[in-house]
Image 1 (spheres, rainbow, N blue to C red):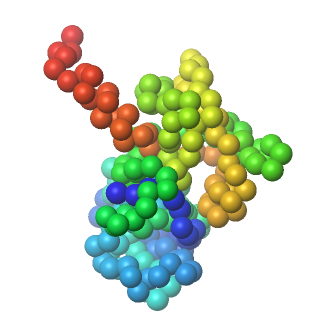
Image 2 (image 1 turned 90 degrees about the vertical axis):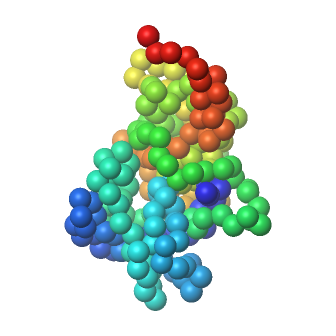
Length: 203
């Protein structure tokens, strides 16, 4: 479990075939790697991964084909958002994040507005019912607040206001129109839908 509060930005410095997927080597500075153990869960671009080896400069993870087929942003050379998993005593400054991507969205706009930035994303139509004004969404592992939502024929457009701190301390600053992003809906919304639909027989 994560909170969507990115603490470091790393870089994928190597990628190689592994089984039916890829093994990635990620380098990151000042990540307290002495506290990272093989088997630990780390969110990379909002995707929960398991550490399979480590070095003085970083760690390795493996992405299965199933993961690669439904996510984006795990390419060689890419700067990636990193977050270690929560401990029971941690404060949750974002919202509860599972690290399980629900869909891939497309950036429509990433432009400065005064001192902040407006990030506008087209989310898959299937995720629209989970998105709400002032609700939470995770974009590439970053917990963010939705400022507006509009359903269209192509999908659901959502607008997010990014403060300078978020832009400067995550890999979101590299986004531009056309960029693809990993989206995870609010965990509570997922359970609410299940409770409301439980017992209904599909026609």
